[in-house]
Length: 433
Image 1: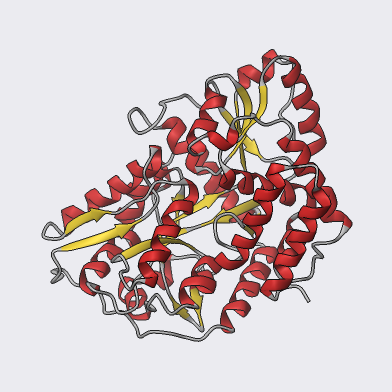
Image 2: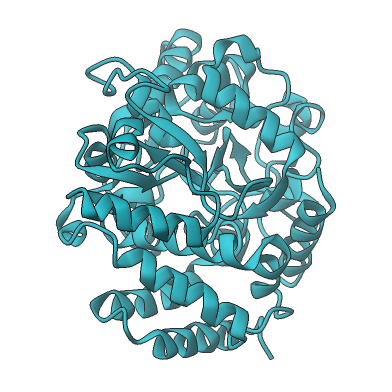
């Protein structure tokens, strides 16, 4: 991986060392767990997401036919609703047998800090995971050298999906690579009577925010926002937020009323909008056959490019699963984690989900053109972490950012107020002095 990725991981490892170690190593998986069922909690309920989970469930049921798989998925984009339900259950002492969590500070700064998950040292050794997971990924789900979750994939946040016909009809000759080029294209698309940039509910607005900021600031300054080396009150951040406000001015007026990211993506495929900035889970939705997807053809019905300003940058996130502290059914949970960690489980899951394996030994021929390109970029690009999807900020810090974002979306002219709120959120977290 590039030096900037190593710097990002080092930052997260240092942050995690400040937290107290917790729990005891979970027991190794067995072939015949005693529990009769395992409850798996996630937010994968639609399109390629649900289909990917179903594919991994099928592998699980083939190996463990005596354990009933209970799908406890909760709808709501990027886990917004699910994590609220999960927080209530955890506070009540009623954890699922395993739950979905993003690698990074969502795990280390939230669940590990609260002593809600158990370390998986023995499991990692038994499954040989130290040999098949990227060496730079393991620190993101570890504290004091103890791994706390099983990553099942790698996703990319900074993908701009677009409709080639809408661009052509509007006279946009080239896909924009900078925000200035993007805004110029938006003027042509708007004049042609189309929405330039489709957007969904508030979490997708945060997803757009991180992409505009990274495309304006660059990788190094983006990383610095989470360590205190980049000043949230700087002129560079002001420029990024001005770009964000301008990008919002080209979005669909009904975005807040859309149920999730899929309707926003469909505005592009239906020809009502030109661009949608969404993670590569959208690829599963776009290319999977009905009823799990739209069954569209790449380069004809849709196409993709890095979001403006991010060529050569890979904004990453990773879905993973955990073992609760004091798990009710540790054997059954270990059985699930065994499948989630396995080559067979990840090869079944990721091509349908629209992501690449966390493991380094998956068969690349199983993946489509887009995912193969993402796999190459993952190893070649400068890699930075996602805010929206749990890598760079813990849940408490992210919640403060989300509150500030909600106020800004109500009045996108108040850039200075938004910037001050973001700086205050960093200060209250302790990252900014």
